[in-house]
Structure formats: C-alpha cells, structure tokens
Image (cartoon, rainbow, N blue to C red):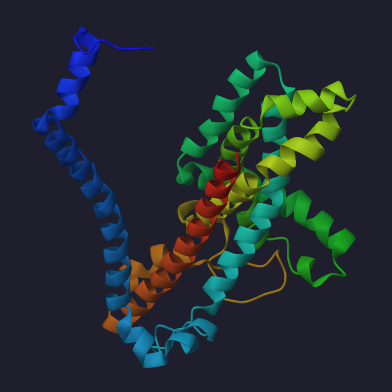
Length: 322
C-alpha cells in the first residue's frame, strides 16, 4: 500500500518528526519527570543517612552488633539494647501474617474467580476501606472491645487447653503480643486482599477456559492455573503487608503492654521498635538516650526497606512472566 506524502495526516507526521522544537520539548519533559523520580530516591537515601548520623552516639558507644543483641534497656543507667524491640516487632508481625494470609488470600480468590460481579463490586471497596481507618481507631477498639474479650474468654481458653505449651502460659491480661498481633492482622489484611485480587484477575482467561473444557473443576483450575500463575504476586502482597505490620505504631502501642522483655508466652506484654520510639521520644533528656531511639528507628528503616524491595521484586517478576 502506497501513501501520498501530500495527504494532511502524513504531512503533519513528517512535520512533527522533523520539528526540532518538538524533539526539544520531548527531552525537556523527560528530564522534568525524571527529576521527580530521582528526587524520590534521593529523599530515601537522605533519610537513611540522617538516621545513621543521628544514631552514631549510641551505635559507636555500644557497637552496632552489641546494640542489636543486648536485651537491657535502662535509660537511667545509660544502657541500651534493641533486642526486646526487635523480638516484639518480629513476633507480632509474623503472627499477624499467619492470621491475615489465609483470610486475605481466601477472600481474594473468592472476589477474583468465584463471586458474582455485582457482589465483588460491593465487597472489594468495603475490604479496602479497612486500610483507610486510622490506626488510633483500631487501638481504641482493641482496648475497649478486643482486650476484654481476650482477657475473659480467649486467653483463659488457650491457657486451659494449651497451657502445657510455653506459648500460652502466663496470666490472662488481655494485652500483650497475641492481642497486638490480632489488631495487626486486621490492619494488614486489606493489602493482601487488594493486591492478590488484582494479580489473580490477570491470569489469562484462555488458560482457565482450556482447563474447564477438559472437565476440570474450579478447585483444579485454581490449584493448577491461577495460584501458580499468581504465586509471586501473592507473595509480594504478603511481604507488603509485612512491611505495613513492621512500621505500625499507635494501635500496637495501645494494646501490646509496652514492656521491654523477651518472653516465649504470647500472652505476656511486649514492645516493638515503632512503639518505643513513639512512647519515649519526648522523654529522651540526654544525647545518648535520643541517639539510641534514633538507632532503633534506623534499624527499623533498614528492615522495612529490605522487605519492600523484596515485595516489589516479586510483583515485578509476576508482571514479567505474563
């Protein structure tokens, strides 16, 4: 097929391609938006550098590894160790994932493949609305509703049935690691639902229809096609939820008990890295104390950065395989 260079469309295209001003504007626009991309990375790097510089007093005085592995937190004596906070953060985050992952992935499977379209359009916004609730509201709900429920019913039941295990020994206080983990699981489940639903909806329809044509059931299609195809994306959503759990402050602070100790029992009070910074920052009356709190924040920053990087890589891997 031959094109007449005198036609308006072709002539306009030739003029645009040959217009030096248009090329210059295109390069300027690329540089303009590229500046914002670089600025975002620069802010993250600058934040990390500033946290490190502000935490040097505590880190150099005790040593980085000694600061991490020490379990003593005594501001009066000037002795600081971050291990109880790292432990509390790890326990609550992992336990919340164990609760939220089956709930979130199961809901995502239902919304993506099993629910009617009209029901999915109603349920998904409601699920995502949970992510927009302020954390202090979750904390208040935890204090006035969940904590009494745990103290009067759930924890006594766990002690009576599973008290032979170290995980469920202690006193039914209603506040502690398990209560904080339940609050966290409610807060992070919308992230798993949202990302996992979208990933499952990207599974090619032709693959599923081919399985159905061969006589496969819905469960077999989900097991053999949908879940393997979306596996990396689902893992990415779980790790993103983990990053959210690691940095949660207010709701956890209100129900975890805020005691810098390492205990095997999930019923005992604990402490997290974000909670100790929020609670004690205004009480840091000398440089080493303030530096120790910033050092805890620096460690939390590094952990969160690593978790987010892994999550993004998994989601990118899913998109590349499609």
